[in-house]
Amino acid sequence: MSESTDAAAAADRTDPAGQIAAGYAFTGPALDLGALLWDGACLPDRQIRIPLAMLNRHGLVAGATGTGKTKTLQLIAEQLSANGVPVFLADIKGDVSGITAPGTPGERIDERARDVAQSWEPTGYPGEFYSLGGIGPGIPVRSTVTAFGPVLLSKVLQLNQTQEQSLGLIFHYADSKGLELIDLKDLRAVVAFLVSDQGKAELKGIGGLSTVTAGVILRALTAFETQGATEFFGEPEFDTSELLRTAADGRGVVSVLELPAVQDKPQLFSTFLMWLLADLYNDLPEVGDLDKPKLVFFFDEAHLLFSGASKAFLQSVTQTVRLIRSKGVGVFFVTQTPKDVPADVLAQLGNRVQHALRAFTPDDAKALKATVKTFPRSAYDLEELLTGLGTGEAVVTVLSENGAPTPVAATRLRAPQSLMGPIAAADLERAVKASLLWSRYAEPVDRESAYEKISAEQAAAEAQAEAAAAAAEAEKQAKAAEKEAARTTGRGAAKADPSLAEQVVGSGLFRSLARSIGTQLGREISRSLFGTARRRR
Image 1 (cartoon, helix red, strand yellow):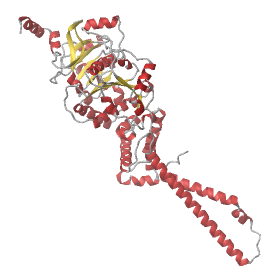
Image 2 (tube, one colour):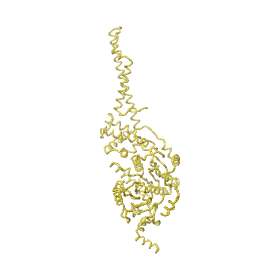
Image 3 (cartoon, helix red, strand yellow):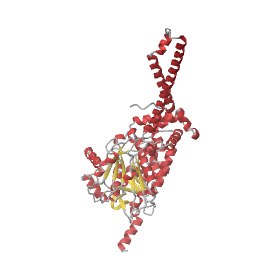
Image 4 (cartoon, one colour):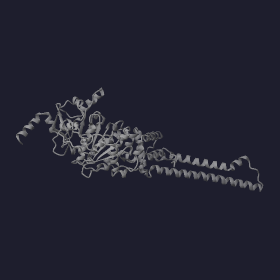
């Protein structure tokens, strides 16, 4: 080692900025986040980075509205794609689609690039655009009700613990009887059957389903359907392995879920994102620690996922986040403050990018103090720093290559190289229709499932009841005819004038009315057995 190098190392040991920067001097592949901020100055020679191999240790991107969280997602996603790692992004507001198009040069971009020593080049990245059930532009993403499961469905239906347990019982019954729950009408049919006279006996041995709870579930389903949820459940079901693809040039495909059309249904899309993650966890094999992740999943508006969540739901999320790391998947939660994420989940997030926070109210001040406590000990006054950061600046701490937290570093972040805004609607539509996945998922399929099977049994029972009523009417008429014949024979050939009652009973109108009553009786019997009316044609 030369004397100049020794002198630089000694200076770093006495210089706090040098000590911080030394914590980010990784030897392996890493993503460049930006340049260190210290004592009011940006130091372009002190780069802040995150090891590529640590991206599956999960992370948090937090900050007040307008502080640059979305651009941070874009910056990280671009570099992951460039390193061959597929990325999933939820586009809540419709401004992430620009990642597939080259950025627009400008004075502000040039200034930022100079500040952080970035060689900025306009670049677009390979991408696919998806939509929930085909609402809005994008390849439709659908799930079956069975795949979604009772825990996630209870969350989106806002059921309490007792109702959630009852819904689990309904799913168990459907599975055991081979009644496939593909869409919401399948679930509705099974719930209605299980509170009918015949259905109650089916669940007697395992707890039963109260009429009151069934009514709550059915009303919640109705409200869910009026929000447009019918389109989200059905087939063809989306294969989440599609999110793991790379492009022909080796770059990772950026999958963008377009959500502006359903942004007024936060419970729905946040829970649906959790389904995607849970499905990946169930399908992927164990791989341990890799040189780079197989997928990095960005979970925007994360506070919506945890708001009002049941204990079972939180346990499910925590377990998924804890264990999916060994499947090679990294998860970044994006929200306003760390307090939005439950402590058990927050403890799993090794990488942090914290944008500015506001302290305008006592609650804001309390949230600020709580956020500061979640960081390692720092050379900065974090309370002052977090309220003074500008747009595109953040406090960073990540896991080093040996898994230890890096020093807290105030950072001026690099500028994304793709378009910072939405692409034109026509361009997005063309990209969607040109995708090889469009023909696979665009058209919905409605095959035989629980609704059709229960409806068929109902129709058979109605036919049987009608036949029984008709047979009873025929037998009654035959007996009446025999009685009349015997009476006529006893009198001889002479015929007495029939009484008024006999005239009425013998008329065609009366017989028609009797058959009608028999048919209606049969239908009422079948409805009491199955709980639903015959499907209208």
